[in-house]
Structures are given as structure tokens and as C-alpha cells.
Length: 517
Ligand code: FAD
Ligand code: 2HG
Ligand code: ZN
Image 1 (cartoon, rainbow, N blue to C red):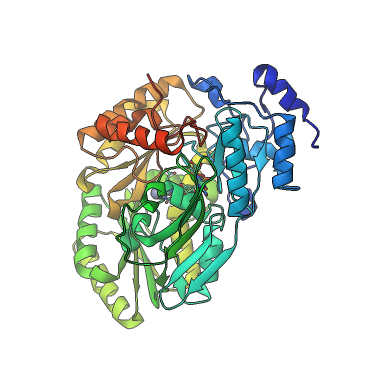
Image 2: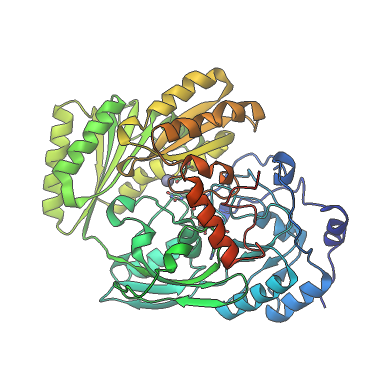
């Protein structure tokens, strides 16, 4: 029998929570840290109007059952629970008293079967790098981590299909594949911490989307455990399979609300033989757009990324991360990556593209890299913007897709609207996919700034027929604004699916679907 932690006893009286404990950044073990100043994080239930649903509270008997299923892998030590209760952005904090660390699908099934019977709520958690408060409990939900489900099951070098458990870290999978001449079809700044299961659950986009497309295409199969403990094995490795509804698609982007993904089968790409990165300075946003047009027409099939950032982003990565700007200071910067099979052919194409954009004054200065270290240094300027922003202060995040020609308008409008109340208003992102990361940084969270931003940003985005969440999902933060991008009929159908698959609502409650008015 596991002894009952005193904080758990308290929680039965009044949901006592972990407050004021110094927080360890979830990414710090891999060299990233989310924030240099460890300010206290406010409990989500105090900051937002949310009511705990009538789930059971974990009892001593429950802990004993969990211990039997997962010997030595039931965590109740409050210090160890801090990191899983707080999200990467330090914007949301729950007060879970239990962390479960299964190793196998069968263990996940036993846990969910039990939680379902007992009406205990569960938050699935991968690397806890999500941006919308989806990965942490809101109240005292049990955290089920995939951290120990990190085995590769198989890799087939002819088809390029990798089958692995959900808790494999994206970067580890990349290293494993590299040895065999392959790469993962997705890459993101959080690769050192995020899990492939979390990537699939959020339908992560990232830096290779332009080339390899969405996980809805590259995930060939998956295995998930449903709310009542049923194991759904859709772990096929076939490219083509039109036998009935494609159930795996339901779980891709379902943010832990329909089932716990325990394994995935994913199609990987051969490692490109020649990779080049060019980092360019542009005098204005219209030149950024023209550079993109030239890129598509002159680089064609070898173009693998087209990312942009504004001068404010460059200032912040310089100030907080000491990353030097490799080109002359400019209002905008663009990162172009090519990936192909012939170094000579690709560099000839890239050279003529660069001559064209420099001659036509679309670009004022540029820096090129072909060796790995220099390419990584150029990529770091773009990949580490999120980290630099968190060091600047509290960040209000918007992740929107728009017609590409309107992508920067909202950044300028918000600068005018907020004036000096914001420390920084920045725009950057996956321009090649029409995806803007609009971030507003202030000293601390303030309802006044939030009121100036919302619903303004959502209304503006809907007015452009854009999406209010291009790649990060809805989680807790954005569940109530789904209506800006989805019709009432679509939201009702989603609710119906949720009710059918999880009638007691135990899987990641308070997330993704809007609260009932
Ligand atoms: P978590 O954060 O742990 O969880 C995210 C959601 O998935 C939660 O709702 C959780 O309940 C659910 N979940 C996790 N695992 C499972 C599972 N096995 N089964 C069911 N549900 C599960 N995102 C992008 O799309 N593109 C980017 O370019 C990008 N760059 C980033 C850069 C940085 C520096 C950071 C910090 C984040 C970035 N993100 C990006 C956001 C984040 O990394 C992704 O959403 C990622 O896919 C989350 O994976 P994770 O393992 O950390 O999941
Ligand atoms: C990126 O593309 C991520 O860097 C994070 O999606 C974006 O922090 C953000 O707003
Ligand atoms: Zn992104």
C-alpha cells in the first residue's frame, strides 16, 4: 500500500494545490529553457472561469491499484509533480497529485479501464511542450505520461516505414533514422523534448510541412487505447487501405480527448543528399512575398522550407540568446532551405535564385550554408524565437493561417492598437504554409491586454477566412473560440463523437471542445 501524501488528503477538503514551488523548465534537460525568470505560475482554476466536473478524487485504494499495475512507476512526490502540472509556457498550472508512467499498451489499457470504472479523469502527456495548455491538468486530473513508452518497434528500409511507441522523442527518432539514411517527415524547435505521440495528438506542423505535408498524410497507422480501456489496433503500415472509415485520422489532432495514442506507424523520407540553407534580409514584407514567389518558380522541387521572421524577433534572439545576426540588419528575414539529390544541381539553382533576388533588390543581403554546423546556426535563429520570447516576459500567442498576402497586416495593426502597453509585438512563422505566429509580449499576464487582443485577433482572422489555430490546436486556451473557424454543425458533430467514444468525458476534460454556455 502506498502512503497517502498529505497534500492529497488536503486536496479532498479544498483542492489544495502546488503553489509557489520553484519550477523546473520541462525542456531544460535538453538545453532549452522556457524562461530565465522563474516567476510563480497562477493556477488555471484561479485565472480562468472554469468549474471542476464531478469526477472522483484519487483515493488511497486507487493508488494501491495503480501501484499493482505499474510497480514503482506511480509518482506522488509533490516536487516531482511540479513539472507535469505546469506547461512549457508557464501559463497554465493544474494540481494533479498523481503521475502514472506506463511502459506498455496493456498497462495503459488497464489504467484506463480502471479510471473509467472509477470515473477518474486523465490527462495524457508527452513532452509537455504544447502551446495551448492541453498537456497539463486543469484541476486534479491524473497525468498519464508516455515518457517510458520509448521503444522503436521496427523500421523497414525499403518502404521507409517506422513503427514505434508513442513516447519516443522526436529528435531520438531522427538520430535513429539518420544512421539508416532516412529522416522524420516532421521537425520542430521542441524536437529535443516532444514525443511522437504528442506530435500526432496535436497534428504538429513544423518546419518540414512545406515539403512532407501533414501528419494526416504521413501517419500510416496508429494504436490507441480508448476511454474504457479498449485497445484499437489500426497500426497498419500500408500506403493504401480503403476499407471503411479511416479511424486513425480521428486521433490525429484530437489532443488526447478521444484516446491515448500508444504507437504509431509513420512514413519517413530518404535523407536528402544535398541540403543548403540561405538566410536573407528583405527590405519590406512585399519583398518577402516576391522572394517566396521567385523561390517557388526558380527552386521548384528542391525547395524544402520557407520561413520568415521580423526585425523584432531578431532583436530578441540577439538579446536573450546571444545569437548574432548573420546578415545586414533588415526589417524582415527569410530562411530558405533546399533539399535534393545532387549538390551541384541544387547549388547551381540556388545561386541563380540568389542572383535574381539580389539583382532585383528583393533581398539586400544573404548568407549561405552547406556545412551542418553553419546550417544549424542559421536554423537556430528561427527555431529559438519561442524561447527568446518567453525570456522577454509573458507571451500572448496566436497561431493563425491566412491568405499569405495578408500575413503581416495583423502584426502592424496590433502594434498600433496596443501602443506602449506591450513590450513587443512580433510576427514570424511558416510563410510557405500561410502560417503566422503572432506573439505579443508584456511584463506579466494582464486581463486588460487580453481584452485588447481577444476577440479582436479572432474576429480579424475569421474576417479573412483564416484559421484561429493553424498548428498548435485548441487545448484549454482556445477551446471556446473554435466557433471562429468551425461551424456550429461541425462542433456538434465533434461533441457527438466525443460522447460516443468517451461517454464519461474522462479523457483530457476541459480541452478542445467548448465549455457549455
Ligand atoms: P504534449 O505537450 O505533452 O501534449 C500535447 C497534447 O497532446 C495534449 O493535449 C496532450 O494531452 C496530448 N497528448 C500527448 N501525448 C498523447 C498521446 N500519446 N495520446 C493522446 N494524446 C496525447 N508545434 C507545431 O505544430 N509546430 C512547430 O513548429 C512547433 N514548434 C515548437 C517549438 C517550441 C520551442 C515549443 C516549446 C513548442 C513547439 N510546438 C510546435 C508545439 C509543440 O511542441 C507541439 O504541439 C508538439 O507536437 C507537442 O508534443 P508533446 O509530446 O510535447 O505533447
Ligand atoms: C514555431 O514555429 C512554433 O516556432 C512555436 O510553432 C510558435 O511560439 C510560437 O508562437
Ligand atoms: Zn510553428
